[in-house]
Length: 498
Image 1: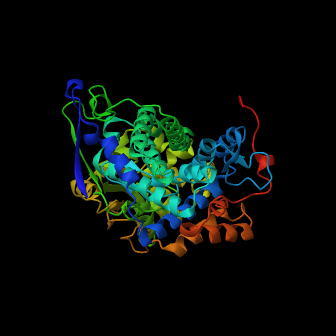
Image 2: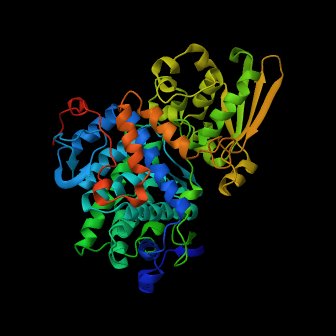
Image 3: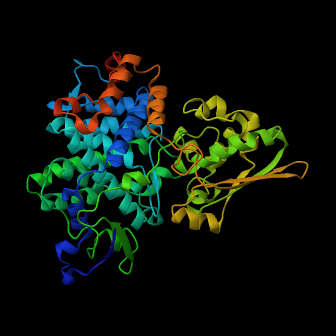
């Protein structure tokens, strides 16, 4: 890997294109380096992971509404909307709209993969867009695997080098460029075209972090799908010869100068050298629990502590020492009273470490539906315990978080009798460095568990069998990387403008 230095430049400097970050990303997209077997295997895992969490969310309102919008944009050959049966009116739609519907389904439960560094990211958000375009454009499985490897590389490298949340910019600003780069690989586009697409995608997908602050709304699920949809449209325009604002990162009025650190800021983004394999997906990790990733380890720690806490009514206080990021995003450092409100939205509770830890400590488990239900959130003893939980930043945990070594912390439970119970955890059990790292069988088991009751068992088996052969799939077989629920068309709401 080589560190690429990025900073703002005056317009008079006329920074050469080959020194611009967008061009460097385009070169990564167009590098024909082969995909390593372990990377290809992880791409398979993550497609199965995305599909499982999407299947579990098919009937949720936000997902149904996104699907209802998408079915109004039918196109042949088009791309599949996950859940729509063969022969349905909306079975094949324009790829940007399939990416929209499937992307919302993937993000709705906040249950897919993550990468944490200078910035947060959910790289699995790239997959619905790349799959949709591959289905529409008639791409083979090999090209799709290469495209996913590129998209993960670009998003992870940007997340390593450039913090967005520090300047209250939502993390999907890294997703637009990664989708555009992945599509460049998928479609074998020239670097000059990919460069323009990346610039357009970044320019049109920067937004504030209010989508993840205070009363967190259903837009949290839509935001990544919107970025991916916009990136597909940017690629289409670039392929037609349209250009983008440049230099988009380094310009005098560009992203760094006015949205990030300002004219004096310098960022260092690690990028693979020409011919160096794209391995970034191997640095990412999925979720065992349906909660914000920085809560994963604490759910596991709560389960471990539960036998030692004999009745949560005896708890006087719970203090969680953790990283700056965790404290200020999902902890009490955020200063959001909504994180303690039993009437808060699921999206808000998902970003409340005090709520998540309290429920996990009481139940010894976590469920993607029941743990967020109004009945569960309003339980009086839970509300009482919840109010006793606070987080504090620990310098050691922040340092280890930024180094990619730990995404957990230390918990001190003080009981009414004055005794204390303490324990700590570095990473979630399912993390590659955790107690029970996720392997291929775990991804398949997670898919079947989440699809149960939504997708028929035979259809689940067919889907998994196809995806497990992803690197060798023909274009027609890539179009079979979908699954059907026979009654879904009837359960898709009407209304709106389309």
